[in-house]
Structure formats: structure tokens, C-alpha cells
Length: 287
Ligand code: PDD
Image (cartoon, rainbow, N blue to C red):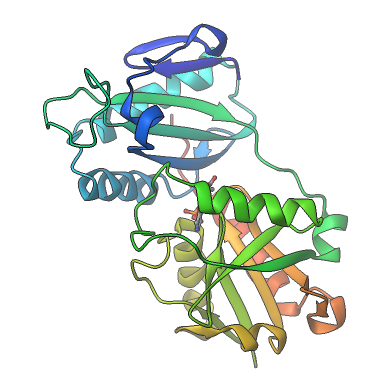
């Protein structure tokens, strides 16, 4: 996965560089996407590209043709990196571009910096998944615009790092007494055979995996409610999952010293995970 795309060219990642005046470097002024790919089949491709356009629009970067161009960039990266039969993810990062000096204000005539590379996906064995994972709770220190997939991830990075330091898979973020999402994933709980997940709002990222899970649940007559989840409800949940493009659906069986479902992965996780794995197979290959 050595070859990357940067501003119209494919090159080894060791040779790729950007200006120190790039506003992504100076201000975190940019957005990103992560698209998982299984043997040439991207999962939720259009949903990811639509969200990318929404993020770009939200921060006033115009790049309407990227959606179309991206497909040929993706194909070329697969070929150049020999990933035809591999599982990996595309990482796309677009920043506002290079300024003449470090000024907070921007003009609309900058040429955005566009980078696409391929990243490995975490591989959890069935044995690991069936044990479930630990999660911690952390205050949500992010600002309001969490629906924008911004590269400005300092609060997320610090929360995730804290989780890793104590052997947890994620930090679930608490805002004003409610569990909103995790540092790099969305949140679901199960109570009385019903899936519950916080509703879409500027407080969370509209996860593609979240959307697919809701769709699969509805198609399979599993009740889903989108509503706010109180912090206390976590301890009392029958199941807790964190979901995202890289992690997929990770069952949480331990949270801040409490056991969830007597530390056993719950039955609905098995059902939804199976549906999700089957769904991945139905996605269209890039060619
Ligand atoms: N993270 N919430 C946050 C804060 C995220 O960063 C992510 C994704 C999600 C899940 O979104 P999706 O299902 O579309 O991947 C929710 C990515 C994978 C990352 O930062 O690497």
C-alpha cells in the first residue's frame, strides 16, 4: 500500500509531501473519509462520497467533480498497490489548500489539496469478537459541528489514546449526561430486543455503518429507536456496540468496571453482525 494519490499524481508515499503553508497542516482546515473495501467492493461507497460532499460544503470548499474523479483514482490505487483481492480502506483527505501566509481567514480561490491512500483494516478474529471489548467513558470536549468529518480530531485523538492506555477499544463520549457516540465510532445499545442509537444531529457523525445497520434491522423486523441515551442507561443495557467503517460492529462487554450482559456478547450482535457480513458481499465491485 505504498502508492498514494496526491494532487493529480500517483507516487510512493515516501516521496509525497505538502507545503508547510497547507491550511490542513496549519489549522486542521480540511475534511476526510474512510471507505472500507473488500475484494474490490467498497462498502457504502455512495453514502461515503455524499457525506464527503456534505462535509466539503459545510466548510465552504468547492470540489464538485471529485465524486466522479474518485472512482478512477480508487481503481488506479488498487492496481498500483496490487489490492485486487485484499481487504483495506481508502483514506481520503481534502484540505483547503496552500495559503501565502498563516492567516485565519481564507479566500475561495485556493486549490484544495487532495490526498487518497490505502490503509489496512483491523482484523478481529471470531474468538476475539466473541469475548467482546472493553470501553471507557470520557467527557465530550468536541465543538458543535461533529457532523462534519473534520480532520481537526484532537479531542477524539486524546479520548482514543486514553482508551488504548487502559486496554479499551473505544472511549464513549458523554455530553451533558448523555452518551452521544464514541471517539471514532457510533453507539448502539440493545434493551428488551430493541436497538437504540442517538438520533442524527450536529452532535454526532452520521455514520455510514450506523445507517446500514438501521436499514438491515428494519428490513429484518428488528425494532430500532433513534433517541438520546442517558449515561446511566449504558450500565443497564442488554448489549452495547460501537460501529464504524474500520471496526465494523464491536460488542462491548465491559464498561468502566461494569459488566454488560454478564460479560457475554448478546444475541442481537450475532444477528446483526451476520446480516452486515452478508450485506458486504452484495456491494458492487469497482469494476
Ligand atoms: N471514524 N463517529 C466518529 C466520531 C467517527 O470518527 C466515525 C468514523 C464514526 C463512524 O462512521 P462510519 O460508520 O461512517 O465509519 C462515527 C473513522 C472510521 C475514522 O476516523 O477512522
